[in-house]
Image 1 (cartoon, rainbow, N blue to C red):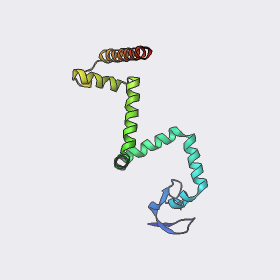
Image 2: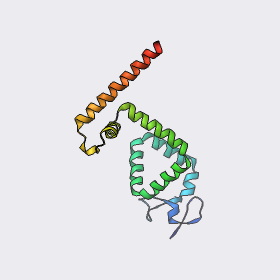
Image 3: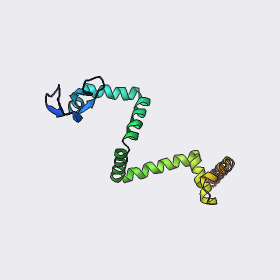
Image 4: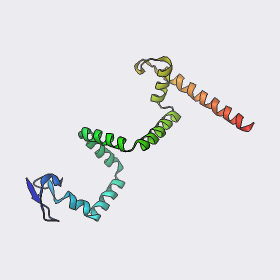
Length: 150
């Protein structure tokens, strides 16, 4: 089925128009291409996204959930095209997690030593390991400070 764009006046397929609940056919009167060319529309949308970060996040998550295959393909494509950026981001992410001693980081530290699954770890084990890691880091800092002063 086709529809005529009110801006460029070209006959186009319905999927070339954005969805709009209030229109009879469920599509806006202006095609996607013309909407993207309108600088006022893009400024409005940019401002709206800036003012409504929670709504934007919710909408993106909803879209990603409903379009899981597209999301996975896009991620794979990005990883393939940006291997160096991925390395930097992964390193930064892992450093942050290790610095904050996130539960997952502590669990992986326990797993590497005791070789037990996470499901068998008790909160006490996690707490003790976190304390041990904090102590060993403090000790390392102290040693570094002593070496620098000598």
